[in-house]
Length: 275
Image 1 (spheres, rainbow, N blue to C red):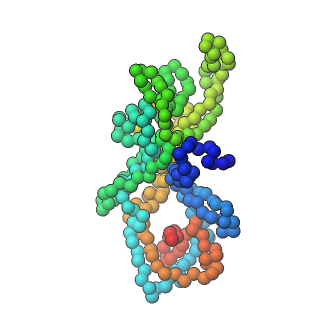
Image 2: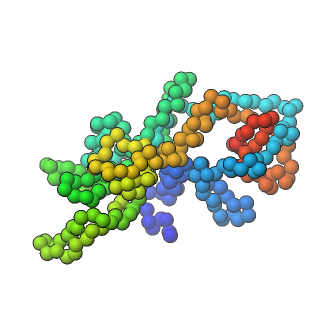
Image 3: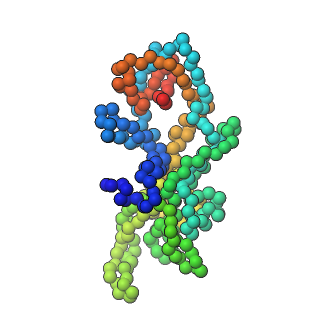
């Protein structure tokens, strides 16, 4: 597809791609043999868990030069705010007024007392609250204002949703005035949940404090923070997490086969190659 033809005006392709990368904590890296081929993997799938793939650099470290070990190398803030871009449609505004944060946002407290600042990871997308109306089985993504008690169309920021054809609902009619054009027991759904009745995946960073529809079942814990960010945050906030900087003697064969996804063994410790 031609990406530039499929995204809204005034949205740059690089910003669109970067928000996808942020949402799923993706790593993008080049093919070693094709400069035009890029591989994309989530952080949780990038690193090899096969011990036989690890590389031992114990005897490649130049011990005559200074080696530094810094604790909590990637930890730069106490509070990490994973959030969608704020928007002013009715339910987004209502949720923010009630809970002081955006719908679908997640706040991670590292408990690191030596850094008080907050670091934000914000997407260009806004969250889209789902609403279920009384007497109807269908669940809708909502983007509107309420003026004088009436729902009205409003401009909005770009959104990201999952789609599904939902089956088995009570028969409903498509009308032209009073003429029934068709009766259906399915409907086209879009929303942050993969299934509005029994979700197994949620595009939100965190489970909402409040749902605006009745959830029949499913799992709200399978959100993007838990799936793609929690292990990374646990690692960089671990008291034993360290960054080692040293000088190593790498042979041409080491450089040719260099793979950031493989663990590095050094003096009985395991490291990820950072730079």
